[in-house]
Image 1: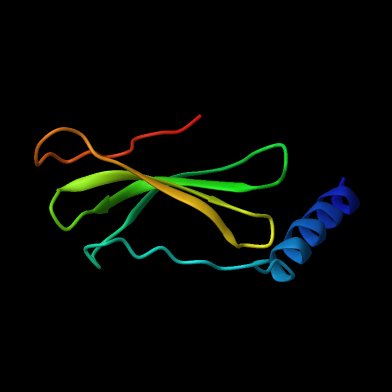
Image 2: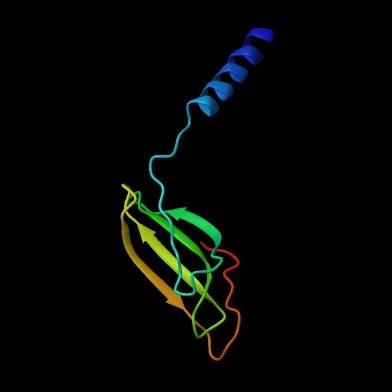
Length: 94
């Protein structure tokens, strides 16, 4: 039993020690303000899809969806604004 627990601890600790990001990317919306991430997903092509909210210059918060290639390059970004000056906040993504 002790040998199994030790192996599990070493495996988990070793994985955490050697973990490092493959790439880092930042999104700065038009209002140059506080962006919020709600969800991060991957698709079958290993692309990364980030969903969140970001203030606009003439709107309140808008929903933002950004697709990144596996190497971290931005493929596209979409802003989704509701009618009027309302807070459109992303809550989840599937």
